[in-house]
Length: 214
Image (cartoon, rainbow, N blue to C red; front, side, top):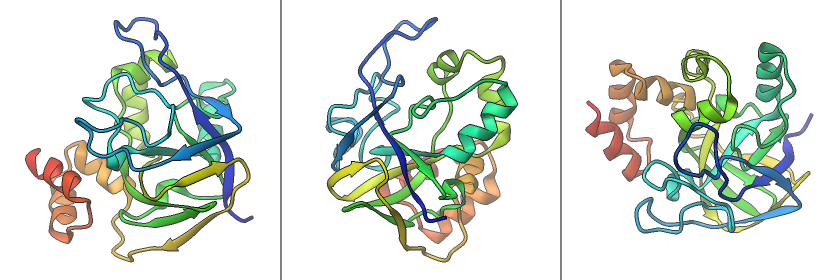
């Protein structure tokens, strides 16, 4: 089966039960999305999806978190674990993919999605807002232990993305350092963090952020 976009999703600011601030995590399928480089996390445009809301720009958005992708297959796995249906967009993802192993992507991998070009930058780190949104016991711990987070993407060539657009991996660096490895590094695996830093496979802003956590 060829890889494709199953759903494109965007959201407005809305309350999350148990949280003081509204969030843009409530994503809903839309006909299409326009993506662009939003610039830096601080002082930039926020989301890489035009019209998509971000509640906290301190932790979300910016060039290396412009677009968030999750595999439909991963949502289905969690749906079986949780005993509930998980609709497209429920993890706050902008792209729900089909036939693509998002969590096997290497850092720096590039995807041609429709007419756009996206670059894999890193994992999604679960937060309190995500936990309240999912309303599942021990959600952050369970999500972290599972270790498959989907991927944040930078926009290297802007444009529109629609449902059923094909996804083609047009560049795979070959260094073998994947998104889940970066996630484990963020979660405290010092050996992996050193390996990723030594390989210099991250965008500069991500490299500096990871180096600062040592």
